[in-house]
Image (cartoon, rainbow, N blue to C red; front, side):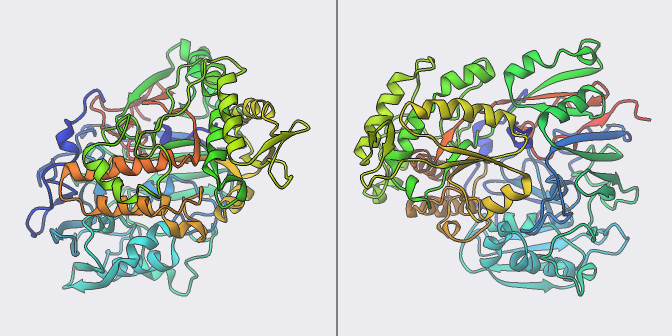
Length: 606
């Protein structure tokens, strides 16, 4: 399985910090905003609590990625872009603190003013905010960025923009957004849009992909050099406008961040062993124990660090596309889950060390409780009881095998479910009532060796049911093209979920994604109850109501049986050069966006 950033504190906030008192504070300009309650940091805070304000600057950080790229614009649907660019090379009006579930502090904006009921939000720009070419950030740039991203950009921007009834300038430095409906989360979402320089895009088709334009932004880093498909180098801007902000103090300490691209994970790991890369994330605990004992580790030149977290596990596994007739029946999907021998696969590949994902928000306070739904969760699900699948209300648990390769109990249950769905074995082949064999394609990407190992074991298990799927491996470009338009039966699927889920959940699970290309709803689910839970989350008046809505959504998702879940790690395993340091005070999100390389530094950098 390719090394993924989102697979990853010595202390965590009490649960009450997760979601505090109901509602925003009374409307007036503030230095920050929290979804519930007040921001934890005062207006004059020195630094984020997980940053070291005294960290030295300098040095070079080299990261490896499996795959390739053909675009430098991460804000559009077309092209393959180094994923880090979206976060390192662009800034927004507000910035997130990853020590608080959904709290923003002023970045390009010096203040935010939001309607307590979620009808509007207003930002005031900092007069000192500048683009990397030295020009000031204007209200015109902000309004153009929001409209362009919302109408021509990636689908992740479209949903929030569709809820904007009016966007207008307020004086010389203010910008105000009024919404079509009450939505308390929109005030925060609108603070997180990247701001681009309008003049750079005059006469240019923004939606087209390529590497011919290096976007001008306001961020601490600018693209210094690149070779399409090979590497991208970011250099720290010595004239960066915001270096003295409390939000930035102790972050962006490294002078150069270089992203190197490799054809597969083996080549990338060999490059790390040879000293060509600064760091390596490992998602496999067995490999962590056995493969990281090479000379540089033994000599102390390479350090193995464990970074804990308390964020949701998200979902990682193999998704079944319910747009296909094969997977429309939940009993078929459940049968394929029963046939997946997780315990045997986990032991074979991970030494049995990795815990299984048990629901989409497991490992967090937002995860569903075991057993039947009770209290507010049960109340939220009750109106949809007749439409929900078995397990949503009465409780759903994944099968647990005895660990043997045969998995006889799982195979028996799978066979019984398939018979209920109208299938039978004829001449050794699982066949439908109309005589068609039950088969499907499993789509993988080149270089995903661990996924291939999982599927190899799974295919052998399916043969015991008379099912022989086709396994197809394609390059990154073909994979993206096919998944964008949902041209697959089953494929590897990963969705990281946060401690502050909200509007983005509609992009993941909303009905519009069934037909509209480019959504994250790869399973093709169309469940009104799921959308109702998201709507409840967005306007919950209290901590308890919000958490109940997320737990209800969690039940709907896992009982939908759309994904065969794999494993997750509540601890990130990061090997890195000994000179690379990070603060002792870890964010509650752990190794997440904003952690490496953002708050790391290089000791004795030359």
